[in-house]
Amino acid sequence: MNKDWKDIKAALFDLDGVVFDTEPQYTVFWGAQCREFHPEHPGLEHEIKGQTLTQIFDKHFTANGLKDKQPLITRRLNDYEARMSYDYVEGFEDFISQLRQRGIRTAVVTSSNLPKMQSVYRQRPEFQGLFDAILTSEDFERSKPAPDCYLKAAQRFGVSPNECVVFEDSFNGLKAGRAAGMTVVGLATTNAAEDIRPLCDEVVSNFVTLNIKQ
Image 1 (cartoon, rainbow, N blue to C red):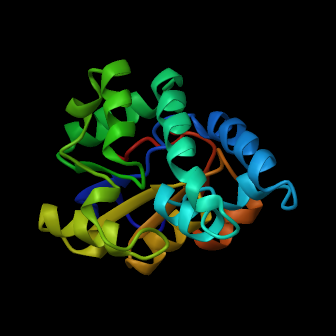
Image 2: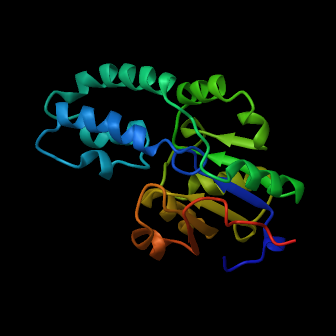
């Protein structure tokens, strides 16, 4: 990382593919929807990673009568998320404990909505206690790759962007962190390390190697 941890006051985490190793599960879900409703566009489930549900619907499920399918897909997604496994990315729990011991503020900044987060809280009752703030898609008008969500998190903590580090896995999220003027650590959990490296200050496969300097 191009900045010493003593200069960092806030650590901001995306959720899926960063805190939780859930991206393979979403690939299965959206792969099924895309094959059903967009058979002409193979691989669409990979292109929409990091987008909000509203963004996905607006771009891909509005024309050609697909707007009427949005409530069905939403119900399917809510049911699916309620049954998903929310397993932490390797090393995350130890890493966030290190951050909190050092007095670094922590936040989740996710494109997920409140219904999804309720599923997380049911399965992971300890989750909310790991963070000083949790920002969801309802908290900002423009979603990633716009920097708004990360700038709002910094504002909530009263810190400047250059005092924040962002942890992201998707291209949209990495671009959002960069646009916010923050240090960006990319997790190669969803995309290949060589593909995300141009958008990151550092690339890691998990949190095991991210020990904070004492």
